[in-house]
Image 1 (cartoon, rainbow, N blue to C red):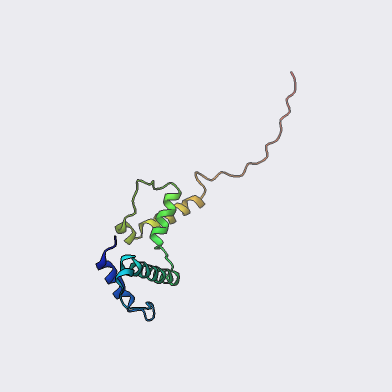
Image 2: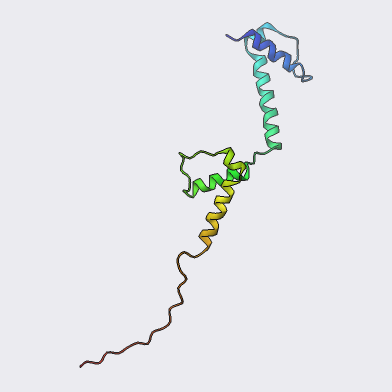
Length: 123
């Protein structure tokens, strides 16, 4: 059974949309849930249109956190912290990690010079 109050609210909301309903409020249509169904469809279309016009883009800090998580710096047990993000910690950590990965590790070794081949003579 449908909630008649919810149907009346849905009908009232639909009244703001011109030409959306062919008739006045009808108890039979309300019992079938027609008004809430129509309102839900209208609302879903409006939300889809808004989402299409305003695609989601996460912040640079959240993107850096996810990249650090992907690289294994953070585990799923580590949570994103807005206070750390406010201070730019995640982008800074990712930058440090990328900088250290570009630099060679350990002391620089001179290129190997060719050693002369020694031939051993039997005694």
